[in-house]
Image (cartoon, rainbow, N blue to C red):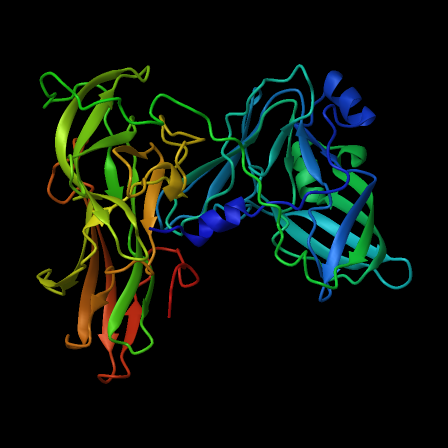
Length: 490
């Protein structure tokens, strides 16, 4: 199962620096945080940073940090429909304040927040602007600050996401830049001036001192290429919660057929990243099913003795997270194919290619799934988990020796399957030209318990044209969403 490009970019964070934010930041940051303030954050940077250049490219985040002061700094973003732009508000104790239209083009972060002026010892300065995801690598900068941060670890960006939350806990910092986008610099010494652009500085009430930092950047040669691509991937520690591990044994007692408390609500996003294979015989696509309910979807599997098969049970929880019941929901099986090699839950979703009259032209061989929270679809839903436990396969899919596993799809999150997984594509060289629909259906057999099944299916209209070995696919745009650059395999 994939993991989408959005997840990769969210986790590709900054290069370790020789100088980073100390435990209590610097003197001016401490004074500003301790005194009454109106601005929600201040910019921080070390005085000197060392980076390494390979083939005229240097990877560094310059040590730039945003330090939240006075109270947590929060940005809430959402779109009413796929025909509407993203609207973002700054949430504070003084109330919501809407950012200017266009502040976020997608959910990967705020647009054009910081201007960098990088001047060598001799010559003209290079100027660039950068977007900022306020869910970067976080650090506590004051010992009296809250011990943990509730905010997401990254800005996931599915093309059909609906809502996001960015935040910095009061007394904490987050990285401003990511180290996965290099600066085109040769070895040498540079003076870097980083400035929050005036429109944002004015909007958030930052003074010139809070909005500007100057850094001495020393770039050294990395002739052997040890620094190339070394982004120093860093993530917050994975929290241990009560749904992190499977139950100790199979459930006993009567099953709970009717659930009166919180339940998941599975929904499908339109298929995206659509393209034809190089020989044009197969239609490739990516698909996402997400949970919009007020409870996580929790499924445990228990292996049958001597078999590559597990019995699967869905568990139910009350508002406090206490388990209240369960239901038998089918099976999990071991998938030995090279692009899988983990345990799959059956009947989670179904992918079909429908004709114009909605009759079935083809069904994907992809019929079983390993659940993981790969894409933040809408973190503004009431029970959304801002920091879910399993955001990769290693936390949820097990290995061949597993006796039991737990697969979870948290509220607000989706599970995306991209095209490189075996068996997902539709064979179309035997189909005539014309209009078709890619159908993504969640919970197709109704085995899982959810609050509604009326929103389980999403259709994406396409048109096949051209000659047999020169086929073309035309994809109908959904609203204002342009997803051509996502997930396609060519």
